[in-house]
Image: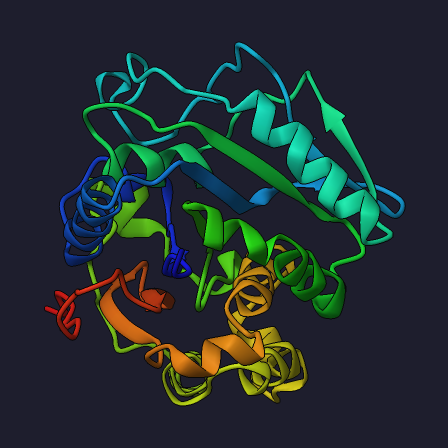
Length: 292
């Protein structure tokens, strides 16, 4: 079976769940394509769950709850039924353990908006079987890249691999007043600051101009970018990019199309929510995205 595409999605603020945007439309498009091609399930890494020490946790709660979502009406998410894929969770743990990771099942973890926001937008009519893989709290880019490369064979089995973090995601540099006072997360009272624009361009260059092992090298190297700490006040929202680079950076992936920027939404002045896809479904025409 040809490998499935992979996605690096920027989930943005919580209000991305409740407000329509070009990113939301693109997420839905990607979900429709995945269902049309009969995916077996989804394997995700988010940005809000990490394991301490050298551990990697894998979701195994048979009845996970959803954490509350600020600035979003509960009707947008409370009735959505999550669908944890326990057999695949066990399979993922074994794959990681065989590769030398201290991986373990976590049967207490409740899901957070970084993942179920994307699932609701992609699959509004029902959640596919889903496995969530935690980050490791040391935030080593090469470790997270290796997690993705270890799980890459799942793409050949029909699983859709998604990393949900942020292209530019620094809460300390956002302008919160329009969202807090007026519930307007898309207000851009001023242009984004230059360091945010510079890093946003660099991550686009990596995803759209590099393939195979070069993609892995370029994405992990971005943590040395002179504007990285401006664009990411903390490392958590960048680890999913490293995970996806691992999942889509094998020599075999040189035969795939380069990544495409399918949509992009700016929020809170300095938060850039870029949506990238690497690879394509069999017989799929060249992807154009929904940039607006």
